[in-house]
Length: 173
Image 1 (cartoon, rainbow, N blue to C red):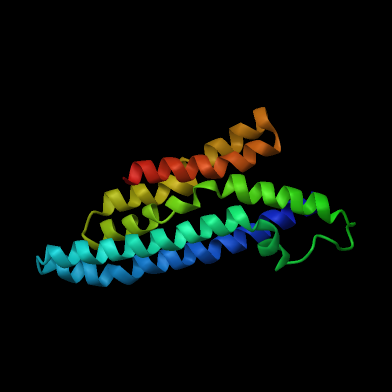
Image 2: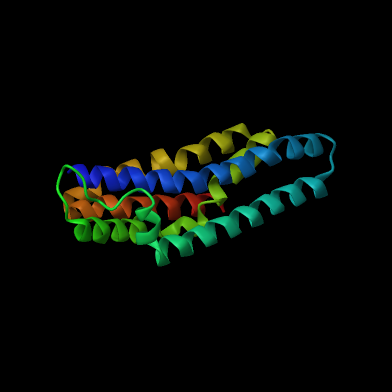
């Protein structure tokens, strides 16, 4: 149980680095979008949004390929799975690789929801922004996280992430 918690925390930290940059992109365009939307310079509004989406898309696609192709070296930055709770680093890395590949499968579309949420906030569409901000973590992640393990065991937890990512991106589009 300790090893599982350790893996989940490490991978969450790695993912949070990528996601923080994406959130920063969204927050970075917010004043530009707000100002230009108010000034009715819609070409600049769409240009700022497009630049953020393209940049976020590139970042998330690169992260996706790193997570899929190099999970073990990335996780090795945090340790080798050996500590006072026992060794077994092969099992540790096997589960960690599986976690990377399944839980973070839709990383390549994870830029859509946070950038679009901030965009809608910037143009005064607070209801849309509030709804979108709830989609990934609350509406589409918690139900599968609670239900799937009952039928799939630990794999149910792994599949809750990609389900939430896909559904939140679909709603955003």
